[in-house]
Image (tube, rainbow, N blue to C red; front, side, top):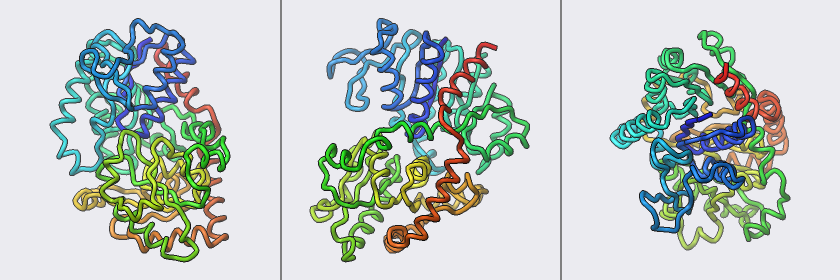
Length: 423
């Protein structure tokens, strides 16, 4: 069968890649065409390496060779011809955007991507269109695909329980089956009369099967060439605007921590976001702070796993941090107008998934002006130096993990999707 999958950001790329592996396992003849990132591309390449239909798929080209070549994860790929090939259509870095003001600023580009996507679906004629989160874009595609007669699945439900509940009508009208990943979503969607399938959370597998969870701390330092010293993890977010607002705070935090005698030898590791480059971080790195602040790409999970504590921009990474068992504080800064609008329409108590799952402040959330270097220094010191506080947080982490269920979520969802298609 043919599957058309759309993921528009880093977290969707992670879940999409694991879903693809599950689909390939359940449907050996699967053809998948997708919008995503390096992880989904890698999953697709692994399939291709197994000798499955390579003559019909896009293949790596020498740099500069072939028509319509695109750089993806450092490799140049030929964009699959519309209506024929499976494979990567567009990388999410070309369209990922978050926030009301930011969406308006990039409206023209986003609408262009929507038009291209509609045409691509029509010409490729998939058996199902699978949408992963990314509601601003994906609801437009859901309406189109449904009206064009395609089966539509939504995986990783849009956060209608947090804001913009009016989208419930669109879920009912345009989505054939909703696949949810959080236990607190079950009573909510029950109350709205929306049929769903819940098979647990795929992040549990992504964490437990990761290299980070299965290598020693010493292996991490040897592999990265870093000194074997204690360090603080700093995750500034995956989008450029997030990095631009968080990096000044994080570098100031690191400088102030280093001035405290007990932390004078600490390192501060910034997890470089997928689809970003050093150019996004360089403006806040100086000759002085480069001595103790390092930016590593492709090592986010290992950085989280081996850190003494972490400062995490809110999102999937904060839930990953809880599953890895690393004490954390969430920091989030956005455009002031976006924040003002959000306060008017967002109706949840917490911004972090881990806290939402157990309906409790397992770890603190510093938002906007509260997210400053002095507040972060105080909180990180508390998490490192106060053993009781640290242990209470780890106990809450155990509750979060238990609430998410066991392993095998991605494979179970893939199997359920195929059963729904073939009913």
